[in-house]
Image: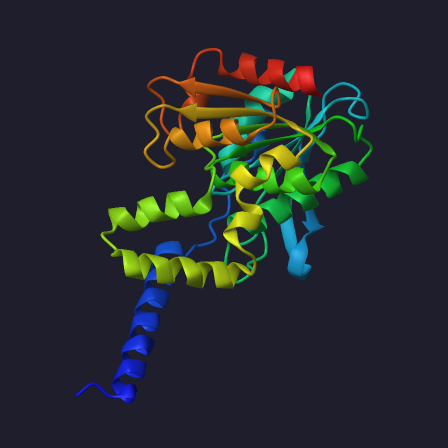
Length: 286
């Protein structure tokens, strides 16, 4: 005979299993960068600035070579489990084009403060903090853009919806909705649907707001910024259909999409003409 005690025990066991799976799948080890812009003979300033929860973010401030007070400014955002060193290839290509650059480690990444866990929502908050810091420098606040990779790009949609200072956004491999990506990952680990639902609910509770509130697909049309959404058509981490979702959710003429044949999640920047296309978009909108 099944008693109430056994039912409660089973529910507690199920909760413990899903909690363990959640922590195991999304645990992050803070790994600092090993190289700096000095690799490319680019001068930079090490900075720290505050974000939510009284946490501090580590970053690099790289002023434009000519008239930094007039030049456009770009916030550079790495992806999940990475650090600002991931943006060195972007720094090496964008710095000669005369942008002010601010690259930083999101919370719970690199040399920034830990904050219990990381999330797309926290990336968005940290991007907002980076924009605020950049605008405190001697720059033109009307010429601020963001270049974000993967979840760093995804967080930019929420930040841009909250912050009209962001005028132009370039994302590479950004998901349209966090649940789409997580469900696909759970399927890859053969996690059954009932457990998937429970894990998603646990993560949402831990983040503190609903997925729908910070999902990129629900924020792109709220932003005043122009968007260039770049996706490799062989991306197996974030499917190319995610880029199409974002395009469909945008206002008319707000968003350009570039699907790059033969490219995956982390190599779009190797495509011939990549930097010219990114620079042309940024110059047009900044």
